[in-house]
Figure 1 (cartoon, rainbow, N blue to C red):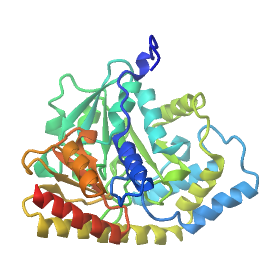
Figure 2: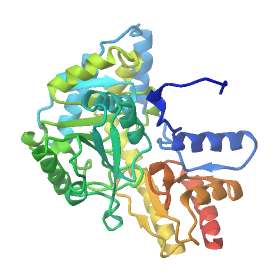
Figure 3: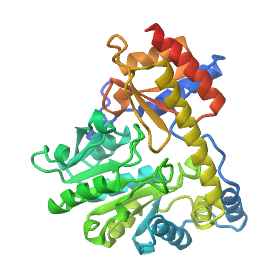
Length: 395
């Protein structure tokens, strides 16, 4: 940095995304000729299903390449509303309350900027996705990590949240959870929603992994709760994980009408509308029931990979603590039992000595743990597990 250069206080808390950094390091080593298996990436390894892919191409050919509406094209918002309705038993969902953004990350950013301001405390169950605290900082809020219970899949409950004094202005809750794969039950979500309503706390529910669920049907959602519990709830989701459309950059929020209008107005001064052609692709993904077969196929494959990883740990690394994943595509295991090593040291040595890239728990708020993503080909996962098991036993 040039001498005397002072950057804005807006980015005083800014840290580079550790998950992105790990992926970049794996790619760098591969480019240098090293045999590296990347199990750090947080994106599906499948191709985008043909129907939405063709819809995106058709949109380009049809000239749908100009500025879209700030809140998103009506066709996508209507498809998203119907999709969310079907996932939650047919409950009414108003498309006017949906705002389409450039990925679910921008939808989160929009919601935090709209709801929180200087000094507002925002509770974040930890371990947590790397960007939640950063986004709250950008909104001039104060992220407060609330440690989850290891005996409860590293989830938090009302008793954990009540320890915050004074009560927070908001709560960001992810289920199925990145990085643990834990899933909050209907009863757990209802208890948290009741707690939040009684204290007039805003809840942002990040449900981007909702359909990658290893129970029956989609994972439980705040949208499964009665209307009187949803007055201060904003749902964040999108097409990136479920439909293998990370690069299309389409996410959206469902919020109470005044909040949705404020989000659309805010977005009009940042990115305007999301990529026009990608919106048509996302509308096809959400609105064409034939794409559900692709979703079921991909989720079934994630389940098989999940079972492979869990079985290998139970068989070859007996005693190593881990969170049993019930959704998403992450496996979170504890490494400090290996002679007190930190997650950062474990991952640094593993990629250097064995060529396997994982993400240290420090990225998520607890460096006793490590995240493994099984969004990779089964043969690659098996090879990586062979290396990982050998490395861990040597420790």
